[in-house]
Length: 245
Image 1 (cartoon, rainbow, N blue to C red):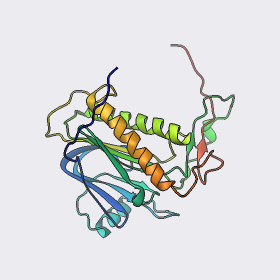
Image 2: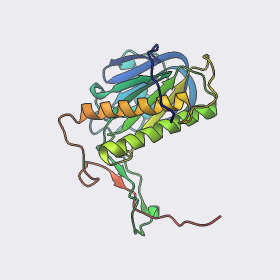
Image 3: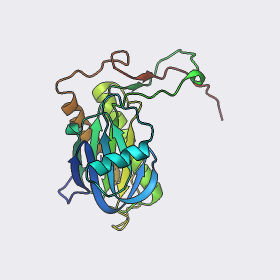
Image 4: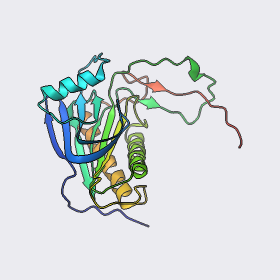
């Protein structure tokens, strides 16, 4: 059985929080974002921005620029939005990996495993959900190619879903997003899957940061016990048609 060892190392990111804007800085970093206007890009910083209750803005690029400028952050980079107050942001480090997380589940997304439903997804509408959101930013001080960086993102998503399922009974929310990052100028690592040092470290960092953020946010409030009990949320109870190949 292989175990993951965590040792002391220099931080991946310089982190600052001002005016409900969290900035993570590492010059020359490559980022892969599943969030708004995401994808692959090189930048010196990334952001997690807490939005107010009842948030209605749709001009998100302009909004992000405004919030970043008002907080005094002049570096551009990918940004995630969350309804979680940044006092509940938590980080974790292991090996060459660091993760920073905000976790809220006011809008859980349930996926039942036992259903006889015949509902169609064709009638579903795209509605703006109140952004409780679980946002994960995970990075490694190693260099990864584009495919391995995508693998790191998928490992983080898997760890997030596994942790949320164990802690809350839901695998995620309707607005979760992940950013994966690496240092393109560092020593190269060929793979980042769950069985590699980077992937294993990412799993424990995401798990422990998600747990810590949940414990902070729900220290004085109850976790929703069902989608019906939550303020917002969805249950995907349709069934797909399966076929043999």
